[in-house]
Length: 275
Image (cartoon, rainbow, N blue to C red; front, side):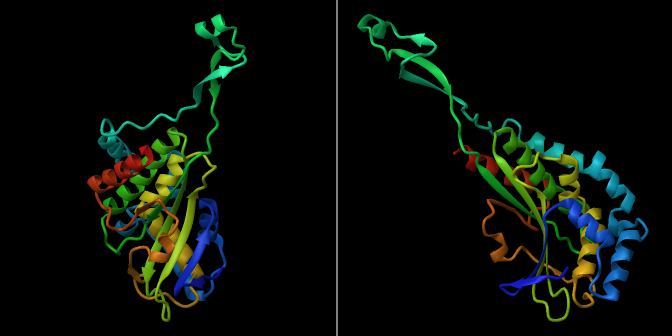
């Protein structure tokens, strides 16, 4: 796999979490140095940089959940409760002037009007789609909490919107500058939830909110895909470039680092959806 360059941005895309995991662990690297670094990121000891997470821990969390991330999700839920009432999507509508139905109107009966019936009929509406983008990049020694609330915001928003009948897509991005000599901007794109998929909270939360996942799995995939040895620190953190932002309804970028910031993002989108 090699990056494609568009608008001076080198981009690599994974269409599922399983595709990223498979490539990070077993994919063919473009350089011997990349293969060595990928193995190091996957199997290095569980230290502070990886939030004390081993590869086995991450695999387990994808199936069973991560208590620390779960706590952040619940904290965001508690903040939004009572602040906004999700709108009900009407599924039925009262129609009048029908030839048959649930109730015959009295005046129509007196007039012998054959179209005097009324009744509830099912209304089919095209499902609304909301596309959420999360920039999951962090600086080398950034606190895990700075990322966990970005991911928690995405999960809570997707869950609430889904309960309203809205289709949701979630994509995470890992965005840096100067990843290797000759690179000005690099973005790794991962679709963690397709619009027609149910929300797997455990897996989506781990991929969006756990810094250990980013620094082991995402970094290992980056190591394999770069065409030249990566610069120290895997480049410089940057916000998602403007061309990559287009088409998304919600962008949860590197400036969302706190519970308050995550709550603000969720409430803002729910208010837009209600209108």
